[in-house]
Image (cartoon, rainbow, N blue to C red; front, top):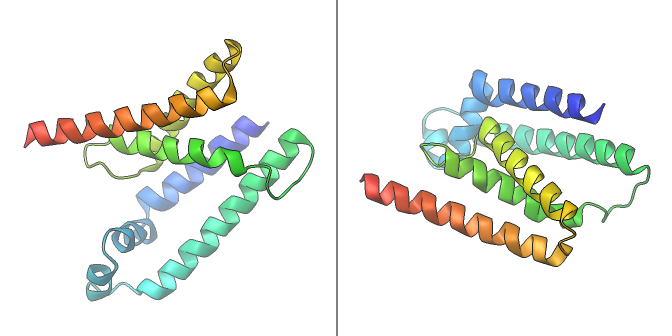
Length: 152
């Protein structure tokens, strides 16, 4: 089942990124590579490992997608980029620090999945769905920024 596989992959990524020194170092490199280097982190090596793991994740995602649609085309998932970025941004707005985290991204994916499913059930055109997703990103980021500025 693809849902179970996706949840297992999510759990593994969460464990790697949130519960290990390796994950904390990757977050440090993403935040400020120069400060990470000065703190003794081997930035080039870990960045390379991060890119390799990202490629592995893309390969697993491609296999899962190809198994779902029973075909493979290199440009098949090109339209899913907006949804992926939107899910991460929604997850970022839900965290107090405004940083990307695995569980926040899961919440963003669930919100967008329910929204997309509802719009599909209502026979809303795909172009209108993309506009609505873009508007949701704008509203989420704006409300998060406004909330942070009001707290200061």
